[in-house]
Length: 145
Image (cartoon, rainbow, N blue to C red; front, top):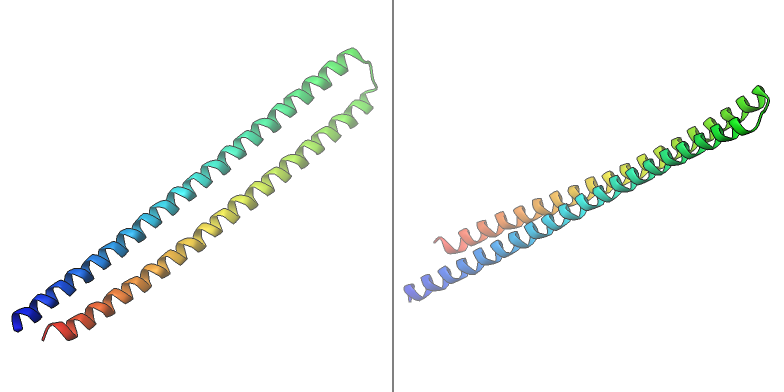
C-alpha cells in the first residue's frame, strides 16, 4: 500500500515537473519570438529612416543643381536669387525638421510599446514564479509526510 502511494506521488511529481518545464519552454519560445519581432521592427524603422534621409539628400542635391543651372542660364537680380535661396533653405529645413520629428515620434512610440510589453512579460514571469512556488509548497505539504 505504501509502495503504491509512493509510486503515485513520484508519478504526480514527474507530471508536475513536466508541466512546469513545458510551461517554461513555452514562455521562453514566446519571449524569443517577441525579441526577434522587436529587433526586426527596429531594423525596419532604421532602414526606412535611412532611405528617407537619402531621398531628402538627393532632393536637396537635385534642387541645388537645378538652381545653379538656372542661375547660369538666366541673369537675375541678386536680391531675387537670395530670396529664392532663402525660401529653398527654409523649406528644406522645415521638411528635415518634420522628418526628424516624425522619426523621433515613431521610434519613441515603438520603444514605449516595447517597454510596456517587456513590463508585461516580467509581470507574467513573476506570476508564474509565484504559482510555481505555491504549487511546490502545496506539493511539499501533502507529499512529504
